[in-house]
Length: 273
Ligand SMILES: NC(=O)c1ccc[n+]([C@@H]2O[C@H](COP(=O)([O-])OP(=O)(O)OC[C@H]3O[C@@H](n4cnc5c(N)ncnc54)[C@H](OP(=O)(O)O)[C@@H]3O)[C@@H](O)[C@H]2O)c1
Image (cartoon, rainbow, N blue to C red; front, side, top):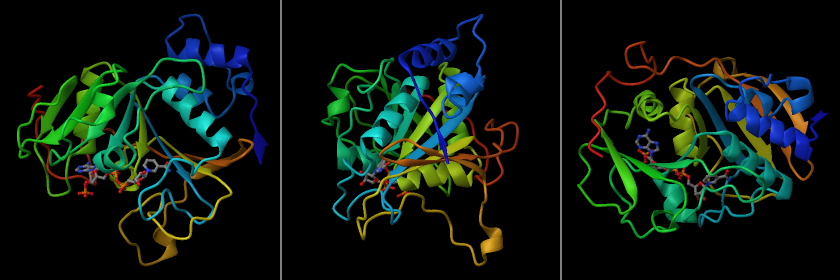
């Protein structure tokens, strides 16, 4: 198992590379192999991250997920947030956790907050619409009831049999200059991106806690045989309180023009913000 030390100096260099420092070369060896690929990513890059228990749960049955990760797992999550342009969560996570999705445990800017709320379940009273934090974007289906969400930009996309097309969401974000993306959960939202082949890196951070029941970290369509299972190239790191599995995937292009395999018919983005 590898360890990674992120000194203040290393972190400053990572932030500088992430923010496009022209003459900074991403030196993976000295900048920490976990974070350098995120900071140095050029063009579209999608990191999915899940913090789970020893028994693979991300929350209790009642939806309590706040302390699944240990302190170093949480610091890791905040580092990931600080290195990306936008963080995506599903509507159930917003309803269960009322999260801020900000960077508080490390130095760095807050990412734009993106919520997948296909059917327009949010009522606008959720904290992130009123906390004067980073901008909020909400993806909804064009079939969802039209509601005003204060302090948010609503992007309406045609809904497909499998919901909102993750490639179209990534494209809509890229059009707004948001290229480096963290998909933070929950399980169903991460699964949508994984099944579409739209994840470059998956970080599974495991904390020594046993929850016993509750939702699992990643919920993909069933397979019959283990030979059909995905086996990404993986490096294991000790974060301190938690263990990180850093999994590398081969990303499919997200553009609806480039063929989106795994997702439904291609349609155009309708931005009614
Ligand atoms: N430990 C962690 O790292 C962590 C992180 C985040 C959240 N959580 C916990 O996870 C739980 C919530 O997870 P979850 O899996 O139930 O919910 P979720 O992923 O937060 O949200 C699921 C909802 O979003 C919709 N959705 C997601 N992607 C979509 C797409 N591409 N198109 C259309 N709809 C889409 C789903 O639709 P469908 O119903 O059609 O699938 C569903 O309604 C909460 O308890 C939260 O506390 C834990």
